[in-house]
Image 1 (cartoon, rainbow, N blue to C red):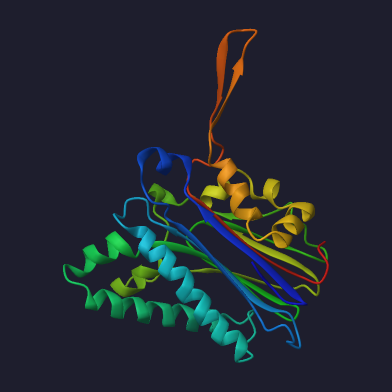
Image 2: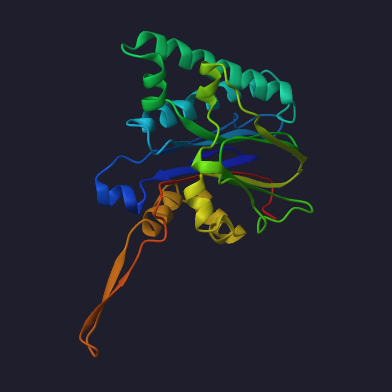
Length: 266
């Protein structure tokens, strides 16, 4: 968790129940940044990335991608660029693609196979500067902007895509860039939440009431613990019926959420 007097954040990612059973690494990642404590206006950025399930090591790309997107966003915000600008997001996309291209070029093996194995990941990112909010999505996932006339109970879900094949930023390296989704808003006080598709499947709104968000922001590990509980199955002994009742985990896929809040929660 990162805090300042105007902007607070929380971010967490956990391995879903299916990957836990299979002994696989979690393929989702989350990252957050907030501006300096004495900044003149609220300033922050959050990112979640979801690695392609068929990629042998797509958690590598997801975790690296989340940090690269966050770093590029941070530089833009500190330079005074508004997150409502499509040009800002185009520059962030270009910078991340350029870094990935250099990494791929330095790795041995077939270029396309390297990209498929390591660098196919979706992105849901948001940035705030003052009362300007921008949410940028490439692939599937979900987000919600709350404040003013916007209600966090109505998140926007993107996907699933045909044949379960969402667009990835790494396709830019193959000369096949996909169209990204951008939503902008002016919110003087509120919150913005981004999540991967695993969380969207269990209903983002159920996890992000104002009271829940406040708890996540106050306790640095609360959001991760909440996701971990959802990814864990349970059982209860019914002594009267002499049986064991088993409960399947709600979060079967990997899941990641990141939150920014500024001013008062709506």
